[in-house]
Image (tube, rainbow, N blue to C red; front, side, top):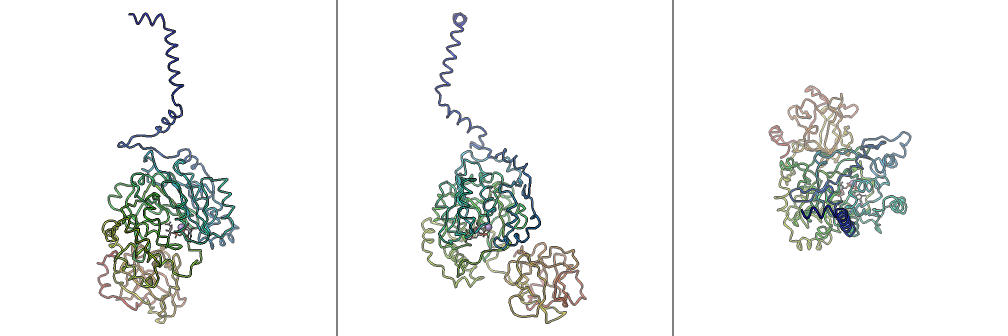
Length: 586
Ligand code: UD2
Ligand code: MN
């Protein structure tokens, strides 16, 4: 009753007092902090006790869908007519259609081709900062800049601290002051570090890494494009374990049309015993957890993230690796053997232009690739190195140079033996890439019975070229072929296989494509009773020829046709008889 009376009598005074107290609280509270806390918590949710957040930049994504023009949305494009001469000139020095690239916007839009679940995935609200490091030697202007712009435009700005372009002694004029000025005005987060002479991509990366101030190093090739939300998936596993190295999915930017397309939906990285980069199937658990990061034995090399702390604990790269090659194996072995882990992160997708051909002359007088491979093998592979040397005895002729520093890294970090890697990480590698090569079905020359002085002649042709000719039989290497245990047919020791992409054509051409082990349109069989070289699973088509035009092609098998009959200089009768029971992936 009494309170009520007080309230009624002093209502106004009380209200004013309350108002004054409230304003006091608001006025004296540290405003900026209050705003910060509120802003940070916006969009942050607790998932299993962890603060997570959605990093998508929906405004940017919406703008992208509205962009129109050549190559937009990652579509394939063709060069406007009249530029053929320039096209050829630019192709020669880049190994891809660089003139077309100049017609495409530096910030062109790309389709979101990620696994649909990536759109909803939340990442830790606190992630480490990143530095992008891009080594380049004579890279083309627009492809280099598109690399930098795509990385910047599609990354959360507070996480991407710097973009360091390392100029490995380029000689193209525009890569000098013009590039510095352009970046200063248009993309100040990026800067160029220049090397005094050609150091090669590995030492260029090392130099870039030394300049970086961010927590995580992200290496990219100089002709790549980062897609929607590419950065958080690379950083999260590192935030959880600083010894994790994380690779994005590497997609394909077509060297001719600049079409952006998926490479595939994931494989585990690997190598064969000549150190060609290869891939292994996903494990059932990887498929089930898609698109969560999965463990991968070996990185492709060009594109990955690693904490600067772990990178330097591992001694960075071996600085004795020169120009190009081998560093992807060195770092992968190091990461695994020295107590780290390597993941592929399906929600981070970055496109790469695989060149049509290597445009640069050899900058050294020696075989630096062989030396690089040997250094890696000698330091990390223990007894397994012999499986490389068995196939490449020539490598033993190359001097590794001093490897004591690298051995000291291994010792200092108490790294595990290579056998541990083979048994626990790359446990299925030897099944797909046997330590010892299984015997060929056939090899040597392939002689025509229609005209026995003629043999199949590869003319040393390579990837994407048509294998079309017959020549006068000789022992020289262009006449040597093998029908391997993988049931594919290839020029001796080549990694390009006979492939028939258009079987319906009347005289179906045989092309050379990267070998994919006898499967699909690379499977061949020698029918030794009938001297036929049969193509494909059903074997209804055979290798045929016109001895007059000295041409070869594939047509429907005809036992009576002499132009379809071939004699191998060597064939393994027992294995051929057993052909249908033998696994092409021994
Ligand atoms: C593949 C890898 C690359 C690296 C290499 C083996 C991918 C997509 N790419 O390269 O990262 O692992 O195999 O070493 O996995 N460069 C220099 N100086 C040189 C030579 C090259 O700075 O002396 C730069 C070049 O401009 C490019 C990068 O190094 O940015 C890789 O060279 P590439 O693109 O010619 O070779 P690629 O794609 O076959
Ligand atoms: Mn490249």
